[in-house]
Image (cartoon, rainbow, N blue to C red):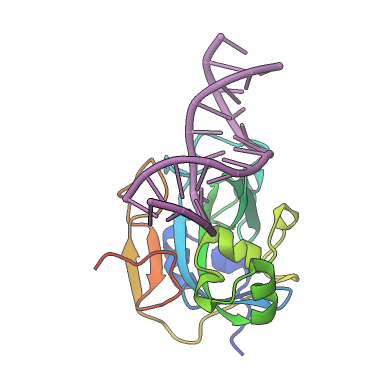
Length: 189
DNA sequence: TGGGCGATTCGCT
DNA sequence: GCGAATCGCCCAC
């Protein structure tokens, strides 16, 4: 089994960490799968929550790397990020999609859906499938309930603009696993 | 203290 | 493709 990713893995440029997460395995209480889509948010990026400074919501982003930043989206969904770079730099990677491999029955029950393709194909969906919520905000990714393991081999990565934002819309900081059927949206060829 | 808005999803057309 | 659901965050008043 590939080694756990240590916190020091995240203590680097978010633009380096983000593509290296593609192919890694993320589990929460044993449920999850292979990371197939992420987005990078740098603290100098107008689209980042941390851009305008620290607030109660985004405080974890300003802490050390390797911790979970979880926030509520559109009043409905949860979204899971991993804090990157040195403490205070306030950069993070948004986990956008997984290929489900472990605990499919649990995920289907939580999502009330039979289709494996739709279980984790979006940031809100995967948090529902993995039962991630505000309770996980500020927890380290290298300890239970999280389990995050390095990829076995370097996969082919596709790059494109990020989804659903209104600022810095052209920055190519969305990364995906080439050819994956489990993306939130296809990458433009 | 109140109102506009969002790193989304789903169902309907 | 479009719009509703839904509510915490955040800043202007």
